[in-house]
Length: 240
Image (cartoon, rainbow, N blue to C red):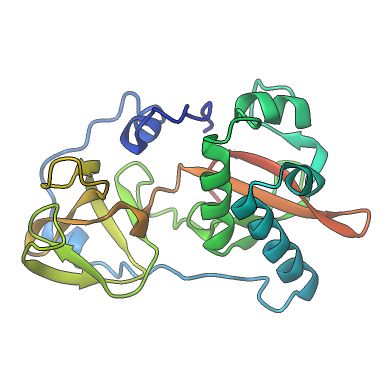
């Protein structure tokens, strides 16, 4: 399932909603669901691969500095831009507003790579290293449209979308039911965004940067002529 990357004005909720057309989240959550083993991650299957780790750090550095030349050098010339999209760097540049300082690509690719990944096979049986692990290794017995993955340890769940609100519980590297992907902070104009989730105590809020949907963008990499390259960057979730 793939979607066209959002312009910088599009909220995270809107980006994810584009991939959820036709899906309605039920209000009822059974105790059986909440009682399941929800642990998930972190996963970094290439932690011992020195070449990958070196490439990863160079790529993250280039993204942080918005070094276009270095980023383009890290991409395969025939990069996959998703179904019904032309392959190649020119299409990549167009779809991601690559020449724009505010392109969402700088943030989205860095987030995907930073979270760790896993080795998978694509539809042609080719071995790829895909990040983040959330999409690459999503457990098939959990609905990817209903759950999100907490991607940090010791995340505080607040009773309201505010850091000053009462703490309901703590979550860490686990799956959780998502009720709303993007909620504004209770302080008008404050930039922090929150995600409303369901926990044993009811509905609570976690900072949106600490939770990820499996349908958000996934980056896949492979060695090309002896060097790692980005070979695809499309909406995620690889059902096994």
